[in-house]
Amino acid sequence: MITEILEKNVKQPKRTGHEADELIWLAPNNPFWGESEKVLSCLQYVRDSAKTTGKKAKKLYQPKLYLPLAENHDRLRRVCGIEFEDFNKDSLFGYTGDFCNGNVKVIVNSDLFAVVIYHLSAPDTSPIPIPFGFMTTDKSHIAHIRSRVKAFLNDIDMATGKPHDIGQLRPK
Image 1 (cartoon, rainbow, N blue to C red):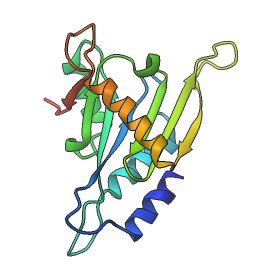
Image 2 (image 1 turned 90 degrees about the vertical axis):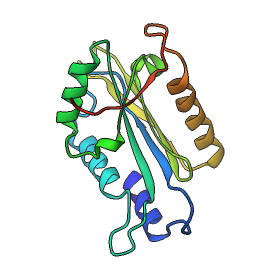
Image 3 (image 1 turned 45 degrees about the vertical axis):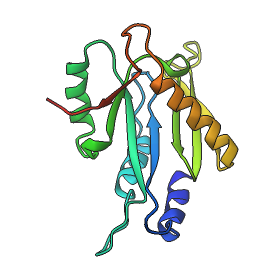
């Protein structure tokens, strides 16, 4: 569904002079995230469709993939740099803390859509968290979800005393 919406955006891009919107992908803080082929292919599509091709290539959106990091930032920066080496390094970001207890993935683009996926931990049923959620194209819902994500990223992490958003991940 995400690729369908993004494909429509490619066919009907915004007028020139308009700044490209952010497409924020806030990964959940669980070890199984990113292991499925669907997630990886969607990430690749998000990366590859961020701008049009041709002589007059136009940036459609600025992807920002936020990955959860713990205390040892340096080691995790290197691991994330390797795992997501195909992703534009200017698009990889890290965050600390747990958005919604670390069990929620959010993908939000200001104008187009928002996706919220909950990762239900039910050890008696499955050793792997069970994903379920929703997608919306309603502008007011998108704005609300985006504001919650931005507020979390800008909020102070009590463990570090710094904002949850630690900025770009540049492998050392």
